[in-house]
Image (cartoon, rainbow, N blue to C red; front, side, top):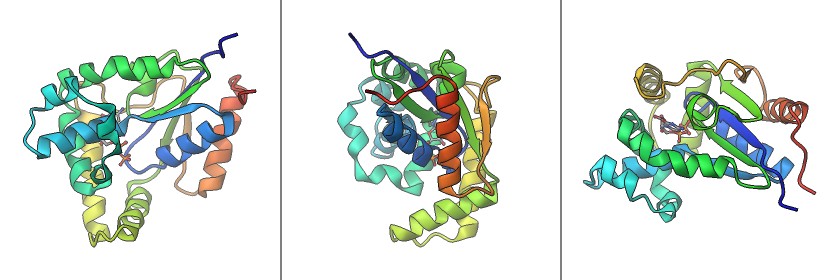
Length: 209
Ligand code: CDP
């Protein structure tokens, strides 16, 4: 018997903790995980090397997702700039949609998973936190990687990306009607993960046998 498809869709603004929550949920249920931000980061990185964003998105090789540079602040800004281009988003759609329906369960995190990529997702979450809390988390992550950006600079970056992601015409960031709102500003990561797992289980998600 083919294992059934079950989709967990997680959206939210920059550095809200989506990635950590998505990985933990995927690990708990034995589902596959796709960090869709990496697709936009990979296209952004290629444009920093001089590529045309639409052509880069159409020809994107999944191996490009493993590039170590993708987590830098410079690439994050480039990602949010290419993410406003409708043709870039369209080129990345089919890959994300088929991933969402793969047998055995899938967790996708991004900005438009609940609203555009797979509105039929069985479990939907919108993970957020105040801009100050998100900036501080990202600042610590970057600092651990040797980046010497100040907290004020990281906060400015987060706000610029929030504005671009929410105000764009193509698939703007917003909570879907049926999504559970998870504000992690005052939560530990363990509490946030537990709340997400409880929501997925309540929606019928079950660990793979
Ligand atoms: O990890 P972080 O939240 O900082 O960013 P990310 O999820 O890696 O996404 C980087 C950028 O890609 C975002 O600022 C968005 O502009 C864009 N993105 C998007 O438009 N749609 C998605 N589904 C995922 C990311």
